[in-house]
Each structure stands twice: as structure tokens, then as C-alpha cells.
Image (tube, rainbow, N blue to C red; front, side, top):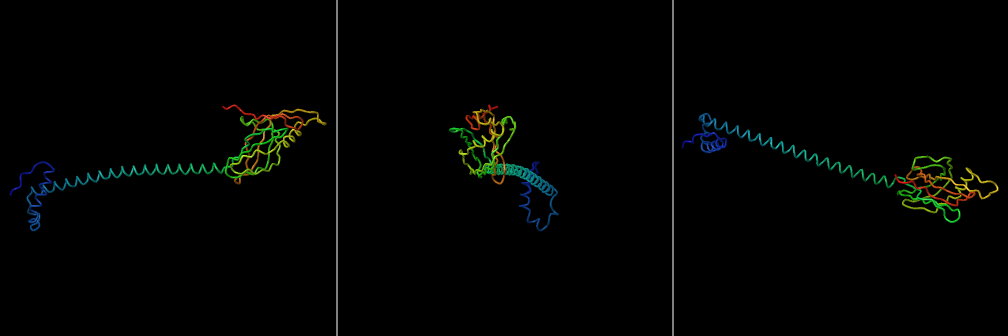
Length: 237
């Protein structure tokens, strides 16, 4: 049976090629393709070209898909790496903040007749060993003005991590400071003295020696005894 006349569509060429091979493939295996009609050779050539084009298109589409998937994977990996780095940094900062020395003079107050107490808070985890008490005058910590006429006194106290200690008396050191910088007449004649004073503590914690921030307050003396004391609270900016 004769094959129908060729049509000018690629799908028809492929169909014709398959039908041709199925019908005449066995005789060709014996006689070879040398006796094929030119029409059949052209049909097979065009079918092979179309198959090659389709394969190339599939390969190109696959390459585009792989490239897009690779890009998405890179972005996901980058986001994961960034989130992991941020978590590590946050954990490290939290650890350093907890173990960084942080001792503070929370308050100073007069109790009873002439007794002056410091309220000391250790906000860090490691204990703090206080070694010295510093007393100065004329400083304004809020404005960065350093105290003058600083005197240093031995002051040994251990404050464990997270503890608040409010039994540290400093009236003796304040009396010595007044006696040195504005001594009352001798014999004592009820000599008043008023001054803006500053106190700070030097301490060791986590292997680091450091100093607390200065605490500013106004003190009134009668002779060498503190009679009144008011902490200086600066207005918030």
C-alpha cells in the first residue's frame, strides 16, 4: 500500500517516520537503507532534526529550572546562615552581658545620727571584691565633670553576683575627708560645712579591676558629722 502524500507539518513528519520504520524496518535490516526512496530519507532527516530541536529545548528548559532552583537554594542557605550568625551573636552578647562586671552604687543615705550607708548592687553573675572607696568633690557625672580633691580609702567588701548590699557604712571616711579639706576650728565649735561630694568604688570582678560610676550627692556637716544628705538627681534629657 502506498504511503499518503507528505504534509508540511512537523508532527505529521514524525508520525510518517514511525509508520515507515514499523512497516519497512525489517526489509531495511536485510537490504540496508541504500534502497530507500529520497522521500523517505528526507522524511527521516527532518524527523531527526525535529527530535534534536526538541531535545535541545528540553535541555535548555532543564538548565533554566536548575539555575532557578540553585538560586533559591543559595538564598535559603544565605538566610539560614544569617539567622544562625544572628543567633550566635545574640547568645554571645547575652553571655558577655551576664558575666561582664557591673557593680553600682545604687544609693547613699543617712540613718540615725550621723550614720551614712551605701547601697551597693552587683548586677552581674560573677562576684565583686571591693578594694577601695574614693571620695571627691565638685564632680558632676551627668555632665562629665570629674571630681576634684579625690581621696582614696581602703574598703574591703565581697558582693556576690545578683546581691544588693546596704550595710556599708562610710561616715568615718566622710568625716576624715571633711577634716582634711575643710577642717573645723579647734576646739570644735559646732562648725557647719556643706559640699557637693562624689563617691565611687574600685573593685575586682571576673579577673578585671574596674571602678563604678561616680555617685553625686550634697552633704551637710556639723564638725565632722554628717547631719543631712541629699542625692543629686539630674533632670532627664
